[in-house]
Image (tube, rainbow over all chains, first blue to last red):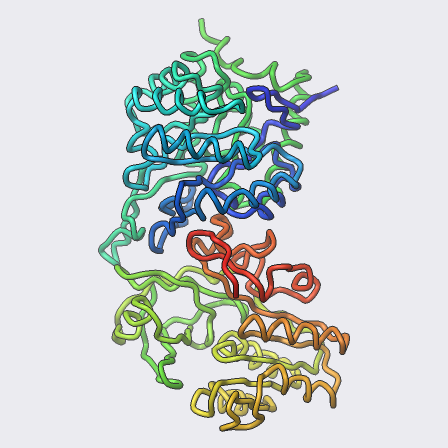
Length: 305
Length: 254
């Protein structure tokens, strides 16, 4: 009997796919729709203390191999988000609230609110590449990552996941810092910092000039990061970056991810992508003699001499 | 990027910008218009063949900048995006409020070339603000005008005039675009006449491609699932005519 369910830091997921932060995660009903389409868990859009409109348009560029975006962390503010979390949970999958702040106190306060609203876990956004004073700007420093995780952890009983940036010398060092701070799990990777210039316009297309690259183009980077993090830490790892089918998900799982997140593929394939991935996983496991996802986590490491 | 062919002044503060290039799209679809260095915003195509055109009200910095661009200047266009209008039956009725005629005009023109017989309720605040009435008459559409102050045609709302038009005739489908309160009225009216509706909605939009959730309405997305929705979906929208999201994602009343 093949079992797709996974345990992520104590959370029971019916399958190892999750909606990644920032995609269709602003309204509860959209999140519930994605959960009903088959996602094993839902990560909300990153929520801050105050309402924030984000960057001006253009905030997204479509590329042949992915997307470049600079949304700039738009969100309705923590206090307006309780009803969205409640509606999202009606979809039947655990809801993980992504939060962003500029200080450890701000993160901790937001975590407390999200737990109060019924979030099943929190994901600390330590990696957004396009918002000044937030995300990767503070999440590239191991000591800061450790301090933010520690403060959040102290505040909460629900699991704390740290989402890390690949735009650093050693993502494994950041993961170790998060683990020292008490994070229950690591999420890797966020988008890679990038720019698109349209020669005819003689300027960067994104209003923010710089954005985050996602989609198939970054999958080899994400898989490498997860592979390195898996060797460095003991806590579970969630793989994200360019997953759009079962084979992509298996790359991450074999590199050491116990579950995967899907973002850009929701654009290219719609919410149906989740059932496509889980169907493909079932098929692969049946053909290759695996009964549980756990049996495959990190097996790419055992091939080393 | 596309090249500006020229501008046309339509009614006070409303212009059409035509591009040298055509756009292969379905009437009712929209494009993201990028004025380099200023802003990018969604606009329904009001003209598609032989040239893409968009008709817009000069409101903020983005549309002010667009209006100041000269023939030969280049404007970024992505799209077309979304779901447009689909012709159902032969006798159709358009109901347009204000600039809502912009996406309906190319649809009604196309419907006429396909042999449909079309009537249009065209609502505006005053006689000066009636848009595309000549264009629609030229296409063979029977036009009924309503103005809020009665300075042209029927005095009252487009939905009130639509009620009169519908009381005398049976249509195969109603096509609507305009203020959301008008759409709610039209939906109720169509329900009483057991006539299908397709209506084009408007929401604040960022990505335009179905990922950012800014234009969400009851778990659906105006950019990707719409902007045109059939009555079967419209009737499930609890937010229709009541709330929408502001740029930060906060719910605000309509």
